[in-house]
Length: 119
Image (cartoon, rainbow, N blue to C red; front, side):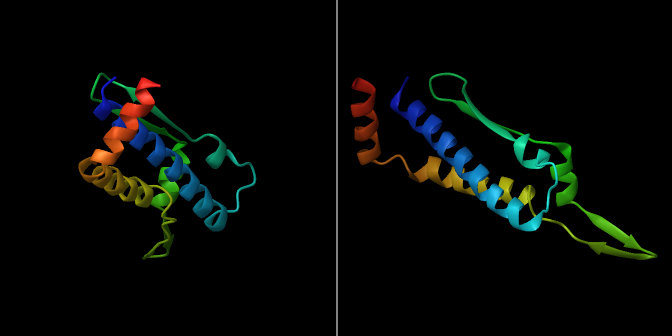
């Protein structure tokens, strides 16, 4: 594994853990779940695609997406009550991942990863 590939893998793992932690906090405050299915059936995985590539996959229940787009009808009036539990995190963490991958691989980080790969 190359240093850049290892950096990409570590960044995606770190961001996936941060995503789940932050989303757990919001789910606990915005939703009053009886079964816990929305929280328990989520998972993140990072798989290596080659020397310089990795993929982060987020699996969740479909209800999470529908709660994010929620619209209620009161007669002819539409009221949007989006819970902001899906898209907000996807795009927010996408921005964080992109900036870390573009600017985070400094000489110090390269030296640290090389040291850990040789041990």
